[in-house]
Structures are given as structure tokens and as C-alpha cells.
Length: 273
Length: 237
Image 1 (cartoon, rainbow over the protein chains, first blue to last red):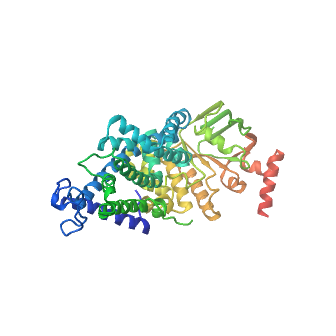
Image 2: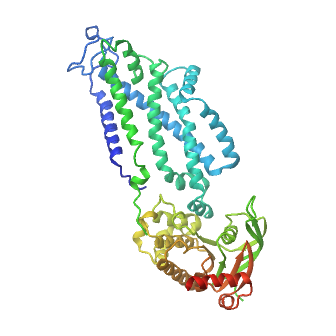
Image 3: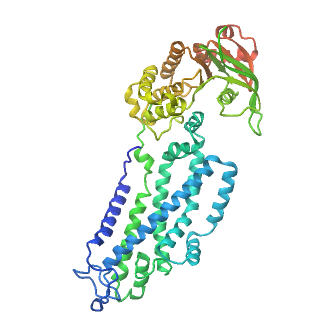
């Protein structure tokens, strides 16, 4: 594999992401419990022991933000794993084979594509109940169509190139051509799609939890923290500020990783003839 | 009489919804000879080569060929840009000549000597090499499957004149050293004249003239060949 050299935007994005990871992991050092209530600390502002303040039940907001972000990221990560796996597989098959395979699978993808992803997730959650697993599956399914479409067009372009024809002439097995020969050449699009999908999943999960159909209490996610804080925006604005700020920072960091100079050009060193 | 390594009889292939293709073409290539397919761009030379190498399925005709190696015109697109040259050569042995896989390193070393490249190219990605080096890698890959006939589809047309000469010299050398049959496709009359022993002139998908290289160039029998040679003469002037 080529060594990936990151541009400045991606470097900043990576630094923000690392800070976020450290922030979440440092939750293990935070001795406060994320769901332990304390009537003496109800709606108490920032202090040394509780830098983000406490909520309406006297729970530590820092700990809840750390746990909430961890849950949001875990849900998004596994949703993207599901979405990329099936999306890439379907897109690769459509793009590489074309013909009837493409017509059939693209038909299904187009139907899924016509349904807004948040609505699809809502239907899924209302059918199978709310909870981490259901939300993960729902978001995973919701991102399959966009992934499949992107991968389809990439594979369609690649299959016409002569290195693929060369592999066919050598009788390289089709699965190997798709996953070993072509896939590394669509890595640029793939990685950008992954980061965009993670961003969308974090937002969608926050949206679902904000609406109360995502992660259920006593667990917290960034969306549910914002939802809970809604009623205290005037009396205890820190309850909104800290979870919202971390959510924005997280999305900004991932957004930077998926923008700017493409990964391909970042590591492609071309010598002139 | 020389042994035929490839024979094509009455081959026809037409592109769907088009009048382009090849019509009723017959040709043969003997062991150790360099046969040229000459004609203007779009006359069907590459289509014929693709039919012979099974990239296209002809609608009629017969192809009897021994093991084929193929050198593509676009030396950039024909090498996987995401893989190092060493990997590309090993992959070619893995599928083109699997019985030799245990001796792959040795074979690769030898083939690099044959195509006059240093061993350090193995660590490079194709886009880190020059056009000439990439075309040599393309030739090396075609040779690794130990073909009886090498189909070279415009192998030098994307290269500048100096590199063209080097690659032509290399192809000639490989032909002499390995007694390898070569089907050399080009629209460049000078290149074909320099390298080929026998030439087929193609026009609109049909063979309009054939003959030994010097005979054909000195005494062209069709008006089309005469015009082709005249255009080359004008270019030189």
C-alpha cells in the first residue's frame, strides 16, 4: 500500500479526532458515575469536581458527555461498517458486472434511495424497537444505497481500464480482480465516503436520540443529552453548551478528514516522463 | 517450413450498432517472425488483436493460436497504479505461469535483465516510473507467462522518439534471443518497416494487401498502400 501523506486540513482533522478519542477514553479515569444522582448537585454549574456542571438530577455532565460521545461514535462506527460492507459489495458487483446484475441491484438501491435515510431509520426503529443495536442496524441499512451508488460508478470506470483487462487475460479470479486489483484504486472515494458516512451517522443518531427513539435512559448519547438540556437552556445553558460543543468539534474534525485535497493526490507522487 | 504459432481464418467481428469492426480477415504468424498489422487509426487493427487475444468474441471465423502474451498501448493504464512493480510481476507469474511460482524471485530477476531494467524498479509504483520503463514492465509481464506469440498493440505510439527506438530495439532483441513470434500493431509506417518481416495492410477492417516487408514497401500493389507510403514519405520530407 502507498504511504498516505496528509494535507494540513486532514492533519488538523486527525488531531481533533485524537483529542476526542482521548476525551472519551479519559472517561474511565472520571470517578463520577454517569447515572448516579445527587440531590445536592442538582443544576450546579462548573466546579473542579464537575467541570461541565451537573444536570437536573445532579448527574455529572462531563461523565455523561464522555459516555454519550463514546456511544454515539460506537453506533456510528458499526453503522458505517455495516453500510460500507454491503454498499461496497453491491456497488462493486453492479459496476463490475453491469448488465442484468446491475439493473436488478440498482433497482433495489434506487427504491431504498428514494426513502430519506432518517425516515428509513425511524421506520426500522418503530418496527423493531429502540436501542443501540436497532439504531446501529437502522443507520447501517440507511447508508447502504449512497455507498453502493458511489462504489458502482467507481467500479464501472475501473473495469474499462487496461490493468483490469490484463488481469482478465491472465484468468485472475473475478473476486480477486474486484477486491485485490480494483478496490485499492477506489480507496480515495472509499475513504472520503467513509468519513462523510460517519459524520452523517453521528448526526442521524443524535437526531434519533434527540427525538427519544435512539439510545434509551439511563444510557446517554449526545442527542439525548441535548434533548434533556432543552428545558434548561436559560437557567443552565452549560447543559446545552458542553454536549453541543463536543458534537460540533467531533463533526468538524471528521469533516476535515473528508475534505480538501483528495487522499489519492496526497500520496501520489508522479514523475514526469 | 516454419511452424505456425497463430493462425486466423475468415475472422469477422462487428461492433454492435456500428459498421466498424473486422471483416473476413485471415492471417498467420510463424515462430520467430515479426508480423506487422499496418493501417490508419480506427481501421480495426486493435479490434483484430482483441479478438485474437479473446478480449472480444468474434461473430465468425477461426482462431488457432498458442499461448499469447499481450502488450497494451497505454503503458500507464495497463499497470495497476495501486500496486508495486514487484507485486505486479509476481501476480503475473501466479496466474500466467503458476508452476513457476516457487522460483518467482529468480524469474523476475532474469526477466528484468531481459528488458534491461534495474532491480530497484520492483519497489516502485508504476506512476513513479518513466513511460519507457513502464512499457518495459508491460513487455516483462507479457513475457512472464512464457508466450509463444507476443501481441504488441501500438507499444511505442505513446512514447517519444528516443524511447520509441529503445523499445523497438528491445523487442527486436527479444525476438532474436527467444525466437519469439510477434504480432506488431502500428499505424507508424517507419516503425513497422524497421521491425517487421511480413506485413498485413488493413483498411476498413479488411486486409487489402500483404507481403514481405521490403517487397511491400518497394512494390505496393494497391492504391491504398501507395497512398499510405506516400503520406509517410511526405512526413519524412
